[in-house]
Length: 462
Ligand SMILES: *[C@@H]1O[C@H](CO)[C@@H](O)[C@H](O)[C@H]1NC(C)=O
Ligand SMILES: *[C@@H]1O[C@H](CO)[C@@H](O)[C@H](O)[C@H]1NC(C)=O
Ligand SMILES: *[C@@H]1O[C@H](CO)[C@@H](O)[C@H](O)[C@H]1NC(C)=O
Ligand SMILES: *[C@@H]1O[C@H](CO)[C@@H](O)[C@H](O)[C@H]1NC(C)=O
Ligand SMILES: *[C@@H]1O[C@H](CO)[C@@H](O)[C@H](O)[C@H]1NC(C)=O
Ligand SMILES: *[C@@H]1O[C@H](CO)[C@@H](O)[C@H](O)[C@H]1NC(C)=O
Ligand SMILES: *[C@@H]1O[C@H](CO)[C@@H](O)[C@H](O)[C@H]1NC(C)=O
Ligand SMILES: [Fe+2]
Image (cartoon, rainbow, N blue to C red; front, side):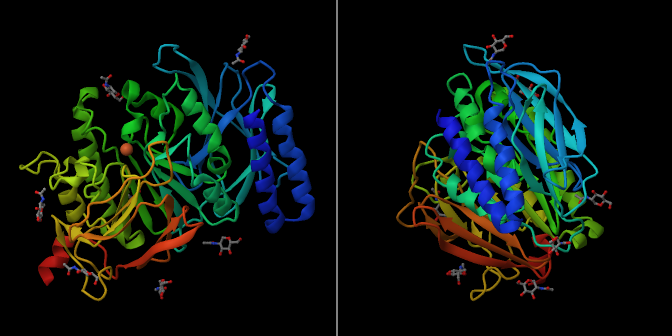
């Protein structure tokens, strides 16, 4: 019952946006059609599509559509088109069984369809179909081609199935067309695997309205660790990832890199993954730094779950001066991500895990590297970090040390999320929304880089 009610209110939210964007006729059509979702409810067949979500594909002209059905169906197809009433294109995909590792060994079928050959900067409407059951209609917008546009994202981590406090506000923002994509920086549902995967199912349904309309890009967190991260791997399809849990993608003037910080903390699942990811990461960053690439896409932004730095008062690894993510092998600095990011000139590093928000001054090796005292974020000599893990979850807020270290610029324990706009090749605007304060912007800054590249070069010049 709850879910039906949920669906209704989300659909009316969607039709509200349509009202402002399109015509009233279209709105009515949309309401009628998405009303179909309820009619095609699962009459005990277990074949109705659920957990519908999208992510960018390997190319800007692609979009990956993922959903789930409890029972096997012989069809996984997406009907789509530029007009809601003419979903003239059909793309077929496939499904595979996913068996949760819990005692009940619950199974479900995960369907994946890769839409290809899409036109850039275009709104597409779509429905997903599994045999006789069809979903309601959703729409997404493809990313514009090339580099000369301004990606806008919502970024947050640590959002649970219970107490997902920021989710309604994120949905409202997304319905207004404020975001090209969303990044969820690890820790989902609390947990995807809990109660034999039922909490994961609940979470995937809760985010459907947001994640079916805006590419929902992810990285893995510690809460996904059960059964070798199998719930995470099964439920999310990321571009060029192939279940490895690290990948990169380009978006306008930005090269985004998603990593797993968890290989370091769960070596029992295979410590070679630590090396494999590091080697891949180094190659990926070096390629992004090829002059023809970096001049086109000067921003390099990484995201991973557990921070290198944090000034919370909870004794997590990031509160130590030698966090594993930062230094790699302690004292020897083998596999140090901070050194790699510094050498490769990563502009911004995004983290979560702490249920709070923190902004750092540009930093390297525990030392602040302000661009200048007056304009710390203009041509800084170190990496800028933000920690944004306060979307809302059952584990509640996390708080801070009384006397934060000199690299800590701002912090807040409010629930909320981060918005960022890459205005162009030199200006990145970041702001923090407090959901506790009814959407108030509690922090903002502009990172200005007239020149992007390895920091070593920059600092040697000084
Ligand atoms: C799956 O199909 C079987 C019949 O083939 C049915 O008994 C069962 O209830 C279905 N599962 C779900 C979750 O609806
Ligand atoms: C994308 O389309 C919108 C509206 O159709 C237009 O205003 C905008 O300039 C386009 N962006 C790019 C980068 O082409
Ligand atoms: C965990 O999964 C990874 C990726 O599939 C695999 O390489 C590794 O061997 C697995 N570890 C265990 C202990 O099964
Ligand atoms: C770098 O440039 C090459 C050649 O244009 C391209 O194939 C590749 O995708 C680019 N890599 C990145 C990370 O942008
Ligand atoms: C961490 O390093 C700073 C100086 O860089 C020092 O002041 C502080 O005491 C160190 N903290 C610990 C726990 O070692
Ligand atoms: C960096 O800049 C900020 C803002 O001006 C300032 O508060 C802070 O003390 C600076 N840190 C250092 C080490 O200069
Ligand atoms: C980049 O964006 C900033 C902020 O909107 C603006 O002030 C600046 O003029 C832009 N630079 C270029 C080259 O367009
Ligand atoms: Fe976490």
